[in-house]
Image (cartoon, rainbow, N blue to C red; front, side, top):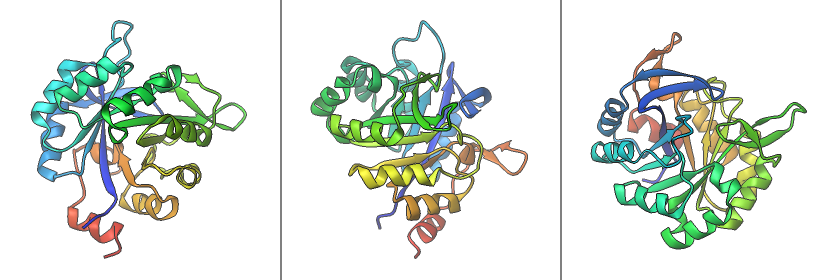
Length: 255
C-alpha cells in the first residue's frame, strides 16, 4: 500500500543529538545512535540527518558520523550538512546514504545541483529550502543556518531548483521550526502547485493531524518532523517516538 512518507528529522551538533526552536539555541537531548536504533525498531519510512555544527574548521561533511550512522541505520536515510562538492556527495553515497540534502551550496553554486543530478541521478539530490519572514513581512529563503537572506521567495527558489535538476525539495519554515504550531500550508501549497517534483514539508508539526492537513491541503509528497519525534507531552520530556504504522496508514490514507 502506498501512502505519504512520514520522516523523522534528527539534528546533530558536535556529534550530539540536539533540538532547536526557530533555528536558535540548540539543546542537547542525547545520543544520536540510540535514536537511530529506536527508529530502526519502529520501521520508519526514512530518516533525515542534518548536521548543524558551527565551526570554521568544518568545511567538509562529518564523514565519521555518517559512517557511524550508516553502520547502525537499517532504513533509508538522507544526510545534509556542509555538502558542497561532487567529491563530498560521492563520499556520502559511498558511506551508505541514499540521498544528500544541499542547502547553502545550492544558492552559492547552483551548477552543483545540475552536475550532481546528472552524475548521481536527480532522485538522490534534495535541495533544502529554509525560509522565514523578513523585516517587511515577506517570506524569503535564508542560507547559512538561517543567517543570510537570499532575497528570493520560496516559490521562485523552488522553481529555480527544479529547473536546475533537483529531484526533491525539503521545505522548512524557520518561523515554525520547533514551535509545534502546524505547517505553513500556504507556502507549501504555492510550491506544490508550481513544481512537479516531490516536496517534503517541514517545520511546525505537533501531531499526525498536522501531517494529514499538509498532505490533503498542500498536496505534499512527504511530511517530516523533529520535535514531534524526540519530545513527548506538554513538558517536552525527551522520548524518541513514532506513530504505529497502522495508525499512519489509517489516518493519512483515510482507510
